[in-house]
Length: 32
Image (cartoon, rainbow, N blue to C red; front, top):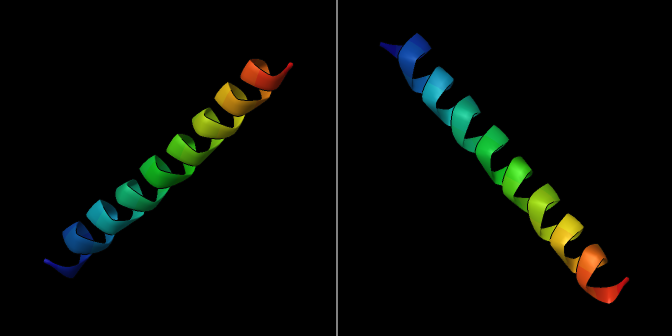
């Protein structure tokens, strides 16, 4: 059970990081 929970948590962290990167790219392209 704990393995599944940590997998889900890891997926959530990666998703948030990807969202941050996407936002940064959007901000850069808007300013540029």
